[in-house]
Amino acid sequence: VLRAGEVLGIAGVSGNGQRALADAAAARVAGAARIPEDRQAVGVVGDLPLWENAVLDRYRAPAFARAGVVRRGAARRHAADIVARYDVRGGGLDAPARSLSGGNMQKLVLGRTLLGTTPTLIVAEQPTWGLDVGAVAFVHQQLLDAAAAGSAVLLVSEDLDEILALADRVAVLHRGRLGAPRPVADWTLAGLGLAMTGSDTAHDAARAAH
Image (cartoon, rainbow, N blue to C red; front, side):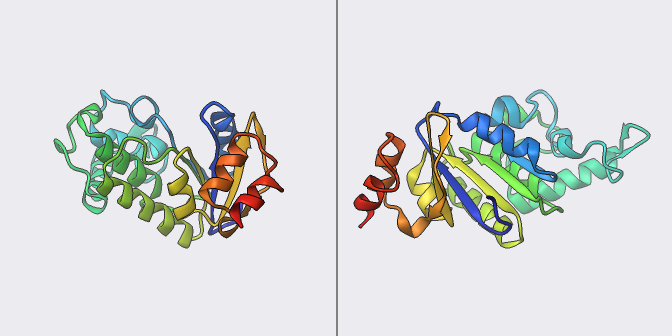
């Protein structure tokens, strides 16, 4: 059960059902937002300018559209706010999103997801994959801040250090089956590794943790 204000980490070896879990969570929870694993193919529309990408999730909202037409000025102001607050660098508002580095692209996605709103649920899939150390720290802090503001954060990651650093509770996904979430203090890297290979999480993983 997801709880408001917490980070629930989902650990698992790639291909064990992470994408299906993320899809189901995002579809079933009203007010859910998503930070997709593939930021280039799914997170942004590469050929559209940065300012249009900044309102992709909200292009029907009254603040950014009228009678089905995007309010260009409002959208550009919102995009400029994201650029300033999330330190998105590269080319300006009219630059195509594909011209951004991976880290800056992820900052754009984060800003679009979080600025001016508190989602009920944030589904974050591999949110720091391929990013440099500075960008990783920034993304982590944004997720923690979102949880502190009341969002439930579902963190799906193959990076066990990331999960142990951010999560309040951790569950392991193995062959499409999700184990019961346990407090992060109950887990170690060794325990998570055992659980991810299919060892009994109630016995072997706990034994490895103590």
